[in-house]
Image 1 (cartoon, rainbow, N blue to C red):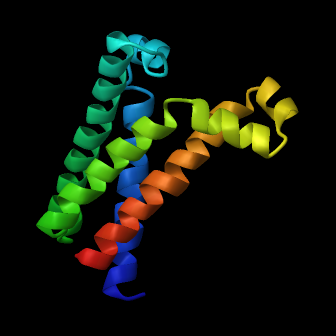
Image 2 (image 1 turned 180 degrees about the vertical axis):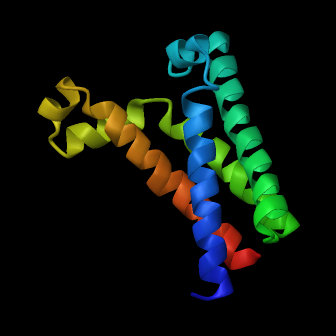
Length: 139
């Protein structure tokens, strides 16, 4: 394994844990209930949730640098968490997951709680993975 591969692996794990922390223990009931709605309350709830993702990601990247001894360049250290916040906010509007499940003919899966799984898969595939690749490629 070369240095870039090791950096990618470490960063992917850290950003995935950051995602889980921001999506579950650090997300308030208010954010969860209102982030997909309309109006100023929903925009604030979604923005607060996205900022939580950015913040937790930055903290875990700093912990990774301190404990694991890797270095993330300044540009990727800013761009990756911003990407995580923006992509997370877009997916959490809920309509992308609903449209995907309709297109993929997953009505039965959706009716039995599948949207939460598709949502989390989208966050990892479209948020965490590209952010980790960005950091590995630019650091």
